[in-house]
Image (cartoon, rainbow, N blue to C red; front, side, top):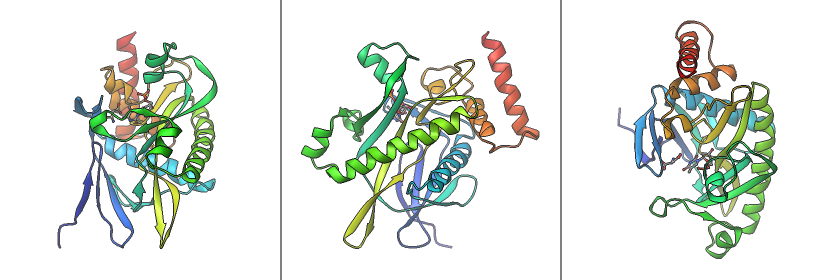
Length: 260
Ligand code: TMP
Ligand code: ASP
């Protein structure tokens, strides 16, 4: 069998040519990076967990009418997706102050924001993904005004849905990053949700303990990152409590006790 063609390799995923025109295979790696890839490492089993978590969230979003690139999961690390042209904007939705918002504006981490904030970052590694305004997006033609309206509407719907989904399992959705793409149909294109939604690009805090269950464990050298991702998957009902999965939960408890 011929080796399939690699289309793109990113920091956490690889895209391969799909079985039919207009499709791609998205492969989830265990590689983790932070601070624009200045910090590099691996989180054991992350690719498998993010594949499952992202499948779950994208399928749920499709269920409430949000169009996404996700078609179906193929195996432990791969999913079949629609090929889109990625809009070069990272869309960050914030409910609680944390990360770069806290740093930039001096707002204490954990402060509930009086209203949800949507921010846009221009996707350019060489520039370190700078924060940009709608004006820059319009001026440089990164997306049209109609596309930005669709993106903002979808981001709010996704946030409302995900806040509810996570609060039902005792997790506070602090903030998260989305990417969108253009799906072409002859001369027309429409905006759909692309990339992934996983603990790599979300801040997820346990509601009772405020424990971080996301990539901040890696960014801040807190340890227990694999266990945190497993805990998110487990609470979403994506892992059984038997065997190795139950072991992972116990590991997180051991980790918590060690830090007390
Ligand atoms: P920030 O506070 O560092 O700007 O991050 C906001 C959210 O976006 C957080 O949930 C992590 C996510 N994020 C990414 O997914 N990729 C990135 O490159 C950065 C900087 C943040
Ligand atoms: N994904 C980013 C990078 O390494 C950073 C982050 O998620 O914090 O470029």
